[in-house]
Image (cartoon, rainbow, N blue to C red; front, side, top):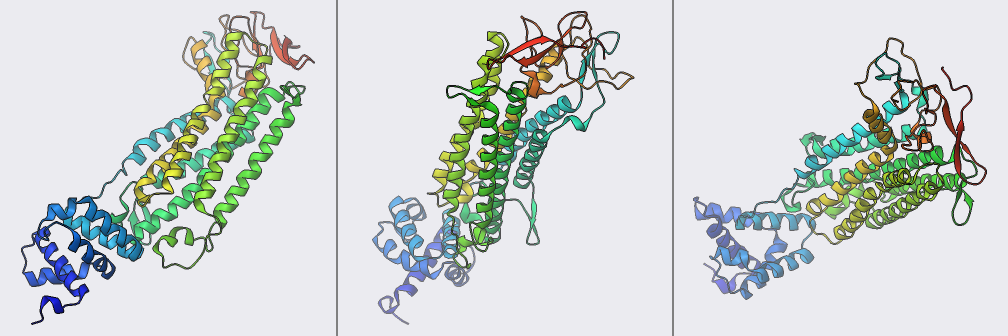
Length: 490
């Protein structure tokens, strides 16, 4: 029999770790079977790291708690393993050490459905209300009791901005569904392992995580660009349709030109980021396989820098798109409190900007992580919440019209026998009827039906004899109202 001194360092370390495993796990099988099992589960690179660390440790080899809880020993061991072993061996060593020390993997996977599903539901409700308000007419006085009525829906009343919101909702839906339900991956039904410790996952799950992380990034870039496009079109309807002379203070640049330039910039930058997403690695599959250190490929575009750049551009664009409507509100022909209310409505969009800033910090933290499947959960959740809040903000004008209509209505919505009407107007106390024409939220903010309460509609009744008011430019860069011709009846 060979003496201890005659054994090679690797053999001695295997025996030491085998003894540690037997003592720690407390197995009730024979020592020979346990020794063979222990020798098989430790990668060679980890054995080379553990020998000098264990020799320098004050802990006894049979003292499980000391070996597992000594921070100095753990730091020295994992520092060596990180620089000596490849990714697969690191994960195997970590799983073995966790098993020996009785450490359970942490899972925060439940947060994805708990947060993203309610936010998606709110977005779905907001988009549904927007489409109803835009495609149907809520009219007063169609029935004898003066209740609200809904006209026959007409898709012709919808425009490109509505389509952009619907597409953004579809992108959000894909993100939520793929993050919350099990998916087929290489013949297995698995759920994307976001929020679970990296070392507890199999290689297949890690590949799956990398793949869907790339898909979610593409969906985020596309969805946020669509939302900003919809907002630009909304601003053009509200502030550019009835007042071609509107200008941006203090430089006096025409509002329509600035809004169109903003829309074009957002579209071009959005396309550029999408192209960079698809070309950040060659081949594209290297984006989710490079972590194993065994795949061939290269990434000319650093993924972290791409995310940083997109987040910074999004925050800057959000600030600029908040300035655009606020610069025009002082010129609107409505009372002070109404102006404040409209300004507050637009300022609610800053909530999405706040989430964008938090997401930017999350990107910075993710660059330094050694446990991405766990630490990137916050980034994924913030991306989902930001998309949801952006969609809701794009629907706020329609939500405002809907809520004001529900508040003004004295009775439930009814369906008249004659499916008529194509405008959205406010219910009035006299049970009068609105004329046809332009019932969109884009025209709504420019109306002045009374000095007490300005409700969002382009043409609304202001007197029992159904005399209407419409909004026109006053030639001084502002907006004013006048009586509309042919307002009586339909």
